[in-house]
Length: 116
Image (cartoon, rainbow, N blue to C red):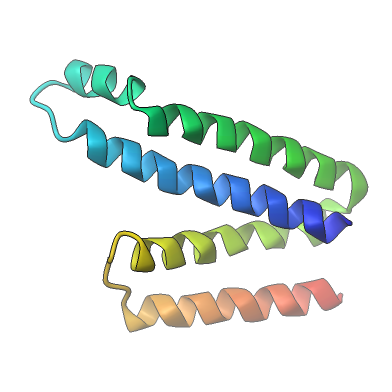
C-alpha cells in the first residue's frame, strides 16, 4: 500500500508540473510581469496545478507517516523521469542522449536504494 501512495504522490506532483508549464505557455510572454501574473492566475491550468500539487503533497505526507524517509525520498526522483517523458511526448521537446542516460541512472539508483 505504501508504494501505491508513493505512486499517487508522484503522479499528482508530476502532473502539477506539466499543468504549470501549460499555464505558463497559455499566459504567453507579456511586456510586463504584472500582466503576465494576472493572466497566469486566470488560467484554469494554474488552478488545477495547485489542486494537483496539494493532493500530491497529502499523499506524500501519508507516505512519510508510514515509511522511513530515507527509503521513501529517493522515489521522488521518479518525478524527473515522469516530467521528462511528458515533455518529450506531450510538448514534443527534444531530449538529449545525456538526459536519457540520466533517466537510466535515476532508475538504477532507485532500484538499488529500494533493495536496501
